[in-house]
Image 1 (cartoon, rainbow, N blue to C red):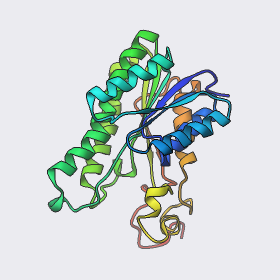
Image 2: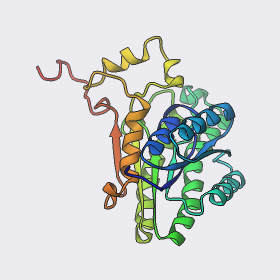
Image 3: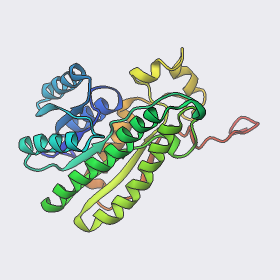
Image 4: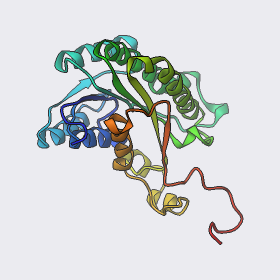
Length: 257
């Protein structure tokens, strides 16, 4: 297994893409700390699935956008894992609302969770990894790193910020043998996205060159690559896991004709 005997912390891993990442890292040999904010039952279900693979896992609660809570989370994780090899900044939230209607509190909540949380956890993990001789940090971006998403202004701003934050962090942390990369998913079928429209998979499959919707494991495999020795000389990069959807142009004729 590519990540045998490694340890990982995945934020926002009680469901969706975060859960898929946690499970894939475990399949590749990792022991995993499963962060959650409100969905304790979901986090415990993720832990149970990892334990069934024969790996060690535990749930840890924290609002990653709160500095004190993030620090407590790392204290708990490092009490269980004397060395943390991998951090995946996945925790995120969004508010679907037009720019002119978005409340300041809604903007603040999205930016705090998605962007500030990425900063706080990267800083805490980076300090530890510097002392331990290196590590891997993988941030989860979005298709809106590449194109603007109307009615998701705070989410789009946060994810765009994460991509540039990834590059800066990679430049600063490289000398400590810490790589920092970003995985940017496209349309991924999870609990939340299934509620966005009546036929989420079918709608997005028709807009995607690979003619299917993405699954959490598609994102998770990209994360596992960045976390592995195969990516030892790869840093400051964004890997698009979108089936080509956000490269596809608005073209008046069918592609390939």
